[in-house]
Length: 282
Image (cartoon, rainbow, N blue to C red; front, top):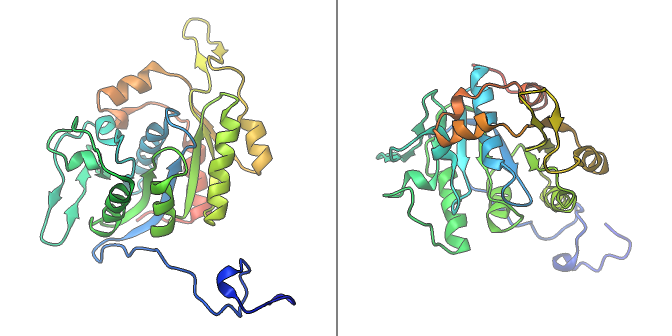
């Protein structure tokens, strides 16, 4: 307790043992038939940096290592996860709860596009409804024996990321960036939000980092010099991976075959997830 305490807890930011009020609890309970060991949020401060791609590739990488993985697509107004996995069937609502759709390699996926009659139908909803939908993906979906769940967040630091951080027990986040210099400011916003919400930051992933010419083997920085190392040092974070501009990756997503991507960019990340988050294979 501060020496200058006036007993007015409602207007005080101190987190002391003598507080006379409890902090509001916005956490939501997982479905009683669900079991999830670790939850990783994939975030970005701006759109178009490849957040959904990174989410998909991380889920595939951990799945290849023998873990049961799942993806909760929280980007309700811009869902792209089903497309990347080539999923066209609808999610089934059983008497016990909503069942996620399984990909070709048995990755559990839930996205608003799996509930719409047509996947091209726009989701014209206001913020509270979108946030409520994301919470229902946590409370009403039966996630069976999941080792790693990856949450594909919408860009920015708005309503849905706030809802996820408050409602879902997130074990850590990975921030996706691109090489442009303005990203430094955007990443700082995402980092500060995570710190405000007491969410551990696992590290940074830079997408579109370089292009490797197939003719001469040289690497070209199409979007300019990378600033990822400076950003990482500034916030005392680890650079987890640098993804190249590779037409094969884009083609795999477009064809719904992201599970067949060929690359070892996330091998280091998978080891960090294993060691830092302490999840054991079944």
